[in-house]
Length: 416
Image 1 (cartoon, helix red, strand yellow):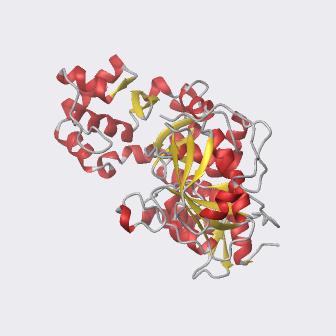
Image 2: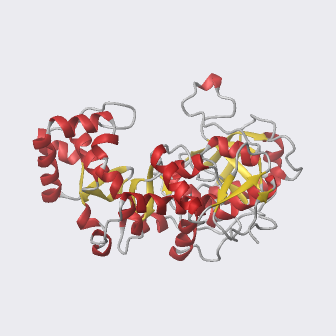
Image 3: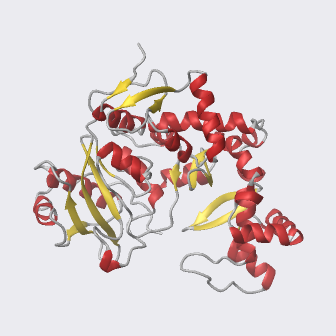
């Protein structure tokens, strides 16, 4: 019988199961396990901040536990590839077979790419073609290498992270337009090559769906990854245009591929795929990246978990409430704590800069969190966990960490 109502607890469990948290960690976290997670999340958001480790490594750790360092990189950059880079939610690793679903976005590059990219594309078409020809001749090639080829010297740094000279802007426009893609990375530096030389022929030659068909499929995938969601959340998962997303959602409701449900505490109805299972319990323990798809939509996080979460990287240090790079701690269907983490690679320790418990956190929160932190430290190739004395959970967490519980040692995650 179709479900027409969810309690708040049921909605949380549906959301957690949709993201893969109802499944136990695999004995062997291999490529098959990665595929299983990817089927749930649909993507891994890429981020450059490396104070702990880059954010795209963390969703797999949250769902698989300690996995081999090379698993994600080989899936993205070595044949047979199962991932490619493109604009999904933000910059993301996406399943390689979904590339045709984003060709409408590639066609829209001149309208939706960022300012500098659009300016170069509109004002200097000859230069754009020259850059593309150079990729064909030199690729895989980095923006820095191509800038040297064009000017004879490396470009000066224009900002805290990026060298956005004209060559870089042109390459990024071609990336947005789908004519080039990421062949591999050195650290976080992208190496570009022609898309048809990087992606499998089966993908390159796959038919291009209509704009509406592609967007409907992306909404279906968003619904599967979210479990239960508002129309806005379905649109946001793959950053679809608002008006078109509204039409696609209405079409899927009309066809019965999405059904409306009343959710306790929600202002409007939620939408879910028919037959979505509601687990009885999701006993997951996980540290979550700031850009994990379970928590990246902050209003949804607050509505589902009663957990107000904001990333404070860009907040001046004296004004930060919880810290610079704060990860929520999920335990038994609730966000029970948050920890500000840093990989001190020189000292070989995982530093807990601050640890805060949420109101009503269980008494064993510190012990459960200590287990996850020890596991993360070993996964990162660090020797110990050191707790700084900031936050109401810091003292009990430090005490919990004095009890030995060494996990097995995998190959460490890259620190680049």
